[in-house]
Every structure is written in structure tokens, then in C-alpha cells.
Image (cartoon, rainbow, N blue to C red; front, side, top):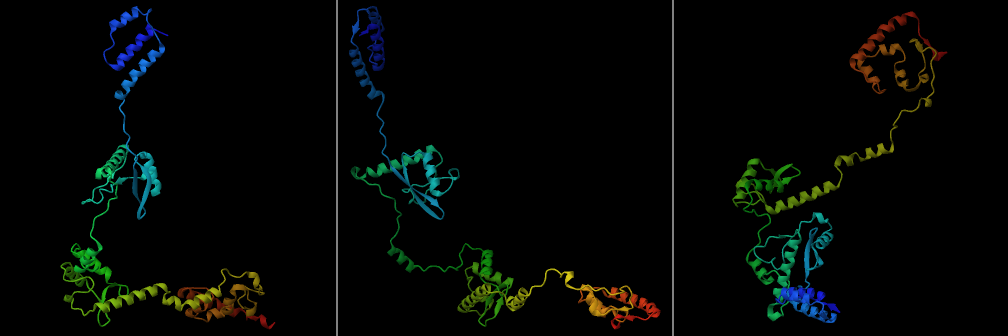
Length: 397
């Protein structure tokens, strides 16, 4: 059971919700004065409250119609082509969309800079500019456009319309073939009006550069290579800019006897020769190949032999220039020089030129002046020594 003190606030709240003016403060005061006599059932109050709420909710909280789920197909660039990105719907969050695009393109999310063109606008002329897709607001705009396009397609034909992919309009293959027959294709080497004179000059130099002549040349009918001068090339480029010549053959104004067929054959032969020469070794390498092989087989020692390999035999009196020691008794690396100039008379009896020539095989390189001074000193010392005593020949003892 509820008393009147509990019922009055309940009526006040109901009157506020209903807004029908049923709430009167004077009546409330009277009811409060008579509160001791008023009583009611708790179930009746609950039923009255439920009926009031049932009448208010449909008008206070309108029903929001959720749009249907739409699959959105994307084409994302990857390397030199594109890839399809599926699994994206109108209910996909923008952050999830960025992660899916980055995974499909094999890149980072921070490196993305996305712009899109709807497929139903792609066939327009002129082609529309891409729209940036950089935040949640632009993503919501994209989803709204797609939903509106789907709704407009399905509303056709009394609500039985279907969604079709946009296709580019164009003529059939039959019309394309007839058009190609009526108008011949231009040659690849034909001069275009957009090229200027200096650009044509550069193209002529690049196309007719000869690796054999190391210059821009042309093969005449006689087989000779005619090297163009700067004036001839400038004249050629000027005539080509006026559409009076092409860059394939020199103009007739240069007075050269040329044939395009012969020129093409000569260029092909030159290209084959250049390819063969690049694959094979130079001629001087082939000529010296046996020499290189012999050097590799007979390698020279990297260090001089040890002194222990030769017997060290010291003569009795080394400082005495008159003492004669046999050549077989000379030690080590100085044997060569000792065999030539063991006696002082040997050095005094040669000329400066002969001394330079004789010392060169032993690894001693001296100038003409030093050789001349050595011979002079030897002659000065040889005369007093030879007058003192005769030389002793140890080989006879």
C-alpha cells in the first residue's frame, strides 16, 4: 500500500511527462492535507505509470532507420599495376580501412596519401580530379555517396533496379579497323611539330653516331663513312624542323649519294660487329695470352735465396788488390761483379761506357760521370801499387 505522500510526487512526475496540464498545485495542497485518508494500491500506480510512459516514448524518441550494409570495392595501386581490396563495407571504420589499404599495398599507414575517384564518375569527360580521403569526415562523405548511388540504382524500374558496374563507352573493333585503314599510322621516326631545332640536332647526333669514327657519320653508296660537319648537321636539323627532311636520311640539299636500304644494312652490320667485339677479348690480349701463361707457370721468386745455399769461401788476403783469387772461390751475390772486376787492372782498362754496360746486368746502375770518376781513381791507384811488388797468383799454389 502507498500513502498519499508517495502518490502526489508520482502524479507530479506524470503530469510533467505528459504535459497535459493535469497537474494543479492547489489540488496537490488539498491532497497533502487529506493525505492521511488517501490510500491506493501499488499495482494501480504501476499500471498508471506504464500507460503514461507508453504514450510518451513513441513521440519523445523517434525511430532511426539504419541504412543497409553496402560492400565497397576498391582498387589500390601496387608496383606497376593495381590490386582489388575487398572486405570493406559501409560500416567499416576509417582506421580499419587505412590498415587494410596499407597491408594490401605493402607499406606503412603513415606513408599513405589517399585520393579516390568513384567508378561511376570515372567515365566522365573530362576526367574528374581525385578526392582526398584523409579523415573520418571525408570517409563518411564517401560512404554517403556510395549509399546514395546504390539507392538511386535500386529505385529504378519500380524498385527492381540492379547495381551495375560502370563501363567505358567506345567504338567497336570494326569501327577501329576501318579507321585504321582510312588513316595510315605515322612512322616512329617522323619529325613531330613539337620538336625544336636543337632537339632535332640532338636526336640526329644520337641516332647516327658511329663507334668506329667516333663522330656522327653516314655510310655512302660507295661504302665510305662521311663524317658530318657542324654546319651540315645544323642544316639537317633546320630542314627537319620545317618538315622538309627526316632524321633517318640526310636531306638532298647536302648533296650526298645515299640509299636508305644500304644504310640500314650497314648499321645492322656495325651493330653485330660491336656486339661481337664486346663479347670477345681485345686483340692484344689474345696475342699476349701465351706469354701470360708462361709467366703464371714459371713464377719468379718473391724473395732472394738464403745465404746458406751458397758456400762462403773467404780468400786469404781480401784487402790486397794484388792477390789473385780464382773466380770459383768468390762468395754469394757479389760473384758476378767479382768475376769481372776482381783485379784493379780490370777496372782501369775499361771505358766509362763499357763500365755502365757491364754493371747493368748485375743490378748496379750508375751514371756516366760516376763511371768515369771510378776509372780515374782506379788508374791513379793502380800505378803506385803495381810498382811496389808483383801480384801473387794463388791459383798456382
